[in-house]
Image 1 (cartoon, helix red, strand yellow):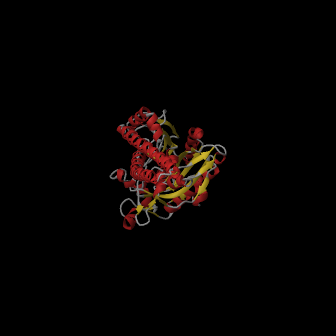
Image 2 (cartoon, rainbow, N blue to C red; image 1 turned 60 degrees about the vertical axis):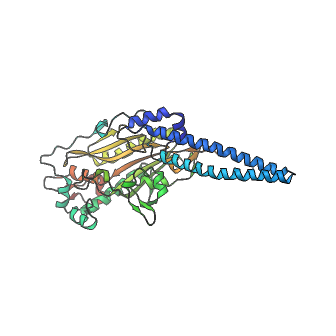
Image 3 (cartoon, rainbow, N blue to C red; image 1 turned 180 degrees about the vertical axis):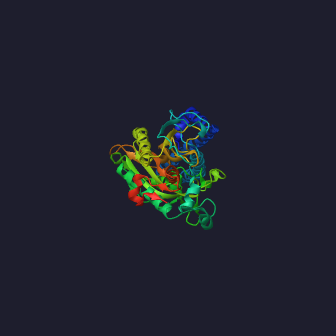
Length: 421
């Protein structure tokens, strides 16, 4: 969430950021009007409270009964006005908060301008795509042929866009998750096992509500939400807390299943296991000092790249433009792995610096020293990596002419097999 003071004091800066995002700049005018209405009502309310306090003291000193009763009547009238203004201020507070809650973060100055994902610049490509002496097969044919993926039973169990991983498929998925966690632990992250459901205020604090409400699964009876990514409970770990600056940075990693309706993707990229309502992901997350978040983003990206590098699969790094950057992000790198069976690049990670956007919504602060005024921390998140696209890339890059799949060397201690056949 943006600071209302920033919008008030630098409205042109915010308008320019929204314009670069391709967003509605009139949002700023609505916030300014709501902020002015709130501030005006609050000033009047504080003035009336001061009048009441002064009158109350005066009544205590008055000797004349008639004058005292008249003054009491005036105080009762002031109390009535205060009650009315209290409601006005609360309504204005809610209005301002609602407007700020749907305002996206401001992109960093070095985020390139662009209208959509077609204008994301590729910063570099690492590795050369394998040259096959046969026509590479897509995972949706490889998986069923090897008994790794069962689409029909997934649909029977849960409907479209669900699937079952079986035998070597389930084993490979479990191995990749375990190996990723171990790799990130060696990079200095602390592993967390998290609830797969969270309270509404936690998902709001992470920036998923209200904007993505229609994309989330909810248990209405308990008013709990299925996590769309471990980023949400990781953000909420320190909600409402004031940390000591000496505790920072905090680096966390967690595996969770992720649940998303993906309504915006309906009819697109639905073949195979590339997009589904349930998938697995290993997520990296950081809390840090504001002045260090840019450097922390670079190490976050490097930590995610290490997974791609160790798997020896060609990948590329993109810097998201203003028209494609996420709602909460200030700056984002995307990592994409090459999938030869589909002849396309698959996004397997987004690494983002969110600045104080989530911290402000979740009220996560720190003190630089005892007695110092609390400041908002900066938060960062990155997939390390997302499955099942990583599984797709492994299957399609390591396939053999006989239809078997070589298991990447780094995964063999976890799978306890060299070849899937």
